[in-house]
Image (cartoon, rainbow, N blue to C red; front, side):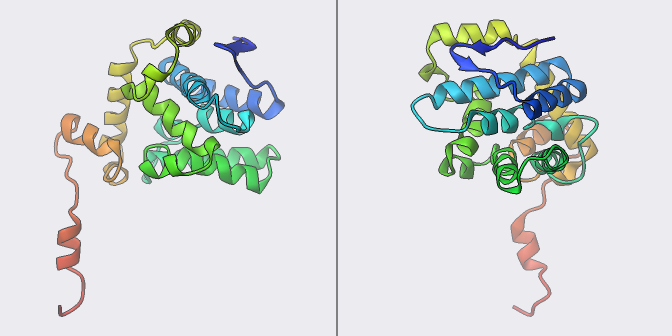
Amino acid sequence: MKLPNEVAGIPLIDSKVAQEATDLARETSPPFLFNHSMRTYLFGALLGKDLAFDHELLFLACILHDLGLTDRYAGEKPFEIEGAEAARKFLGEHGVSEERTEIVWDGIAMHPSALAHYKRPEIALVAKGAAADVVGSDIRKVAPADKEQVLRAFPRLGFKTSFTQTCAEIVQRYPGGAYRSFMRDVGERHVRGFHVPNICDAITEAPFAE
């Protein structure tokens, strides 16, 4: 399926590497997750419309930001780190400079964290776009007509249930990667036997006399 040229006035990037990244996301992600990645870019760009930023970098970070939730790229590390590492490898293989790749890596790795909001726009807007789509953060700052255009172009496809189920499956398979992000909440609510280590126990058990 060919992407539209723009949605709600936001250009959909059609550079060679952006097309290849889109193909990778579409190939590895179920449709609900692919559409979420597209909405993350569009909502992020709409929320940052008064900022100067590199649209290609934001697009790459957004379209690849949930690779760590896919069967191909999920692993023992937190999903955002698995995704960032997968994106680093992909971009390196496609000739993207280390400097630009590092920005994409940060955008993906930081997107579940408050740290992202203190970084450059290409990083902060990944977090803002994802949060707008997942929990509605700042969505009222997006014009209703623009929001409707985004949802028509990339429907939610039962996102709430499917996203939560996917996250729960990742937590069940790789619990060690879910201790410090929103994945902990999913694990505590939906994964039987999920237990989060407490830093107080680690301090007490440290190999020192006091």
